[in-house]
Amino acid sequence: MRLPAALLGLALLGGCSSASDLVGAVTGTAAAAGSGNPAVGIAIGVGARAVADWGLRRVSRDWHRTEQEAIAAAAAGLPPGEAGPWKVRHSLPFGAKQGEVRVLRAIDTPLAACREIAFSVDQDDPASRAWYLTSLCRDGTGWRWAAAEPAVGRWGSLQ
Image (cartoon, rainbow, N blue to C red; front, side, top):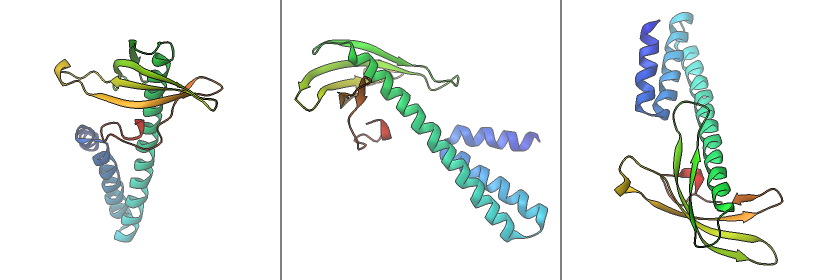
C-alpha cells in the first residue's frame, strides 16, 4: 500500500498532468492484473485518466475564478490612478496568491462601466514581478473579469 502512495506523491511533485497519467497507468495495470485481460485494463486506465483530467481542470477553473474575483474586488474600491493589494486564500493549504492591482483608467459608456487594470502576482523574488493587463466591467452584482480569451500563458483562463 505504501508504494502506490509514494508513486502518487512523486507524480504530484511533477505536476498535475503527470498525476492523471499515473492514475490511468495504476488503475489500468491493476485492472489488467485482476481480470487477466489487457483490453479491460486499457479501457479502465483510459477511463480513470479521463476522470482525473476532468477533476484537475475543474479545480483549476475554480481556483482561477476565485483569483479573478479577488482581483476584481480589490480594484472595485480604487479610483483611477490608485493601487492596492489583492490576496486570495484557497481551501487547500497551498496555492495562496497575492499581489498588487492598479486601476489605470475608467471607461464609462451608456452600455457599461468598465475599468482597465494592471495586476501583479507576488513571486519568490520581488525583482521578477510581472504585470498583467485586463479589463473589468460592472454588472448587476459587482465588478467582473471582462477578458474572454487567454492572453498570457502563465495565467491560462485568468487572463
